[in-house]
Amino acid sequence: MVESTSLASLEASFEQEARLDESYVVLTVAASLIATLGLLADSAAVVIGAMLIAPWILPLRSASFAILKGRLGLAGQALLTLAVGVGITILMSSALGLVARLPVLGDEVLRRTTPNLLDLGIALVAGSIATYGRLKPEAVSSIAGTAIAVALVPPVCVLGLLLALQEWDPAKGAALLFAANLLGILSGGLLTLVATQASLRQQLLRSQMGLVSLLLTGLLLIPLSTSFLTLVGQAQQRLALQEIERAITESLRQNTITLGRDSELTGVSIDWGQNPPLIKASVRVSRPNLPTPKQVAAVQDFINKSQKLRYRLLVQRVSIDVIGPETAPNPEPKPVEETPAATETTEAGTKSTDPQATTP
Image 1 (tube, rainbow, N blue to C red):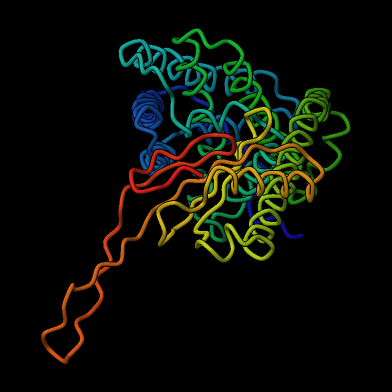
Image 2: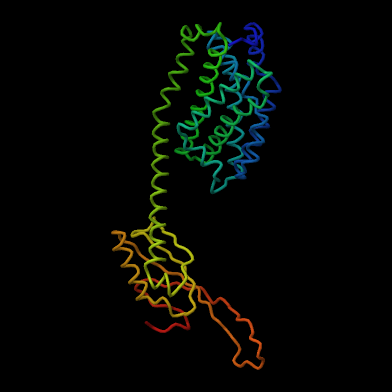
């Protein structure tokens, strides 16, 4: 692969990017405010706006280069610049969290407290493409910097918010996500430099800092793999529960007279949090006394036998009253008017409260 940028010019540009200057601080403050407010508002669009202006790509790319070259001074300067940005973000997000004091945080916050292998993969790709954008600016635009901001700014803001609210366990998850993204980005940058710069390929084996960075990234595979396997297990469990719900719905519709013929089954949901699980069936009926509690109890027994599990059935019915004229003075028939009546619930072993229903 032909090197499109000389090593000397690369070194000069990375030295410039490692500096802590006014523009870096101003952009960090702005990105921190926008991202934190977006997290509090649970707005993904606002958080993305913060990612577009975050300047953290600059010291990160410099750190990857300095670690590979063994320039401890440049690496320390780049990491110090990054640390200042992280410190500013944590302080500002904590302050905003203390002022807002929201009792419940939204999904934009919560989804950044459970990192897994997918997040590490994103960080590796982000670090690689950002460094490649510096090596070949004619091939990749400045949007490569956005990938870095995507991986770092929101987790740090989430960490600050959770620390302000003293939510220690979720804060640990956000800190782990930040660490995974940071090391993933550094490792991705190192590997890209080695792959694209022939003069640097021998540097990796001689760079203790580079090997340590890759080793730490590898160690993160342990907790992240555990989280990933948990995520996969939860997804498989959801699919299994959905399959059970689908089978019960089809069985009720096809194999029962009470809910399949005498009434129209409109929906089924299962509350797995109750013991035994509660099946909620919604039906539309034209006769307000159907189904009766006795019929619901029979359907419940049928479900338990067919599924070989213990469930509790609750039927919510909507009565449809058909109203026509008492006399027909005109030979032309009038259209039938249907008016929905009140929604009611019938449960196995309970008595119906429908005012028009008769006691079973």
